[in-house]
Image 1 (cartoon, rainbow, N blue to C red):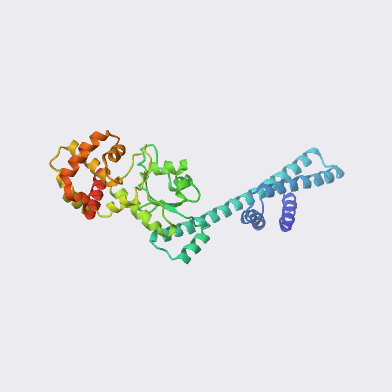
Image 2: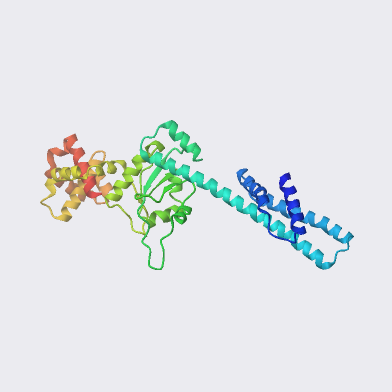
Length: 347
């Protein structure tokens, strides 16, 4: 700081004696160092700017006293005043630019470290020490849970409306969200998803990109959450631009998505008794059968309450189900396969 004051005074003296001119390049490093120093110390530029203004006022008062003693004319005093405040503005501009550059450098460094952290999380089962170290370097406190988000491409640009650039899309995300918006399979990692997924900025981006949100998992299982989210996207579970983003269903439902061909085979075999019915009858009895399997005792009143129908109607449907499926309803393996097939069929 002392060097900055001395340099500014020397610079001004040289400026006046040489009839003006810009700040000497040899002195710029001092003013840049002052600006960068404020950034490195985590302060705003308010104090440095105030110091510049105060220094200019104090210097001007002293120059004015000398001007009165020397009986300088009005024009000379005016030129001197203009030189003082022009000089301080130029000095301040150099410091402001250096401050902005330092902020950008810091943001770029953190951004690169966070991108590496995202890649590590998405790689699958990262080493605990490596994950802790990467999170600390990225200034990203490890949360208890995260949710991975599989993004679609940005909305197609209209002829007169360009698509939002990556930097703009990133600026619309909450600061703790890790983002990869450039790869062929863009994704996000959202910490504390029960809080951040409600952020309106994030919700807007998710809607624009047809995002699918994976289930919340511990950070070490981020790759699993992302894999499940991408599986849902590939299965066509994508919301429209005006609809809420798709959230991963229950873990049981995700299990069924792991091998769709196997589930279809199971459904053909186990639900074959429904094949001779009309579509409406199949739908009603399938819902009744699923309710029967999912209620504690499978009684008519329980099924009626679950389906929102009259107990007598539930009783009639239950008799049909028992007639069609018979012994399978008391076989644990058959019941498991029936429920899996019905969950996949009825969604």
